[in-house]
Length: 73
Image (tube, rainbow, N blue to C red; front, side):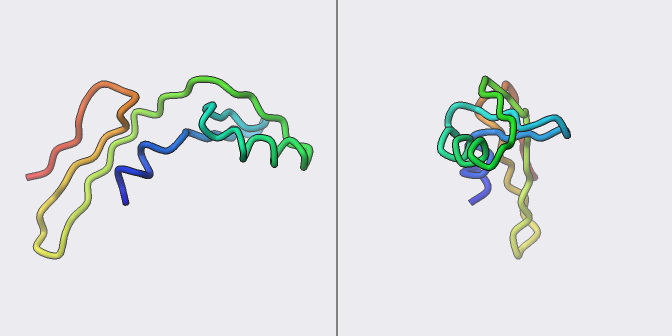
């Protein structure tokens, strides 16, 4: 679901290797074994998402690592 996706460890690649949160350590080791540079640390995306249901109602979700919320009407 959307909230689980926002709660998941953040992973970023800006062309110079992977930056990952500690919760993704299993994936980090697999990437290292393939020769990819990986830097582990704290990341906070601040992502938010709004989901529209079949009736057009909106429900907001937010990354719990940052302040703020996402709200629908």
